[in-house]
Image (tube, rainbow, N blue to C red):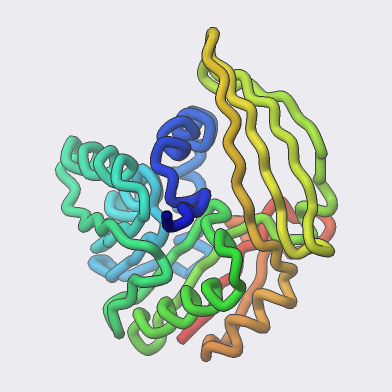
Length: 249
């Protein structure tokens, strides 16, 4: 029987929906996209945008509200169904595509590609991450830009907590986190309780420092790479809340 990777388990993503897309995070979507558009110096109306790993479409929908032509790609069908329903309710024409990010490529089709909220580094083999970056470079039009936002290795080191108990929309979550392979991988275990129900799920992420990820972007052909500590354009330093990289084709 073929092994199913953690990110392919739809039942886990369904369970995590209320935790990942909690009300507090969803409320930030308007601010995040507004700041990102300003950081990019504005975007022309009808610019073609790819939201890679779009989830339930919160960023895709906000980008479309700004007059952009949006395609959202995700591996989790139930999330795409939610995204499509929400877009339809608002009368937004967004294309949602079911695909593994390693397989999605449309040469020269987009003016902007975004990969947000640490939706990168899922794979056991680093070459799969490089394939994704190469596909994104191929999918951009000349002069197009790629934005990736993740929790960089430096941010995780500064804020690391081995155990944490959280409450989200009626769910109690015991989060246990470990650093693996000499700071190359992060193991995230979540014991999720609601009422009498209890489920444990595990996710893994490859960790990248700013220098490491910049090097991989340059190796596949990106240029004019800028690194920030948040969507507002703060420096990527000891006060950074996230790692936001903008790279050009």
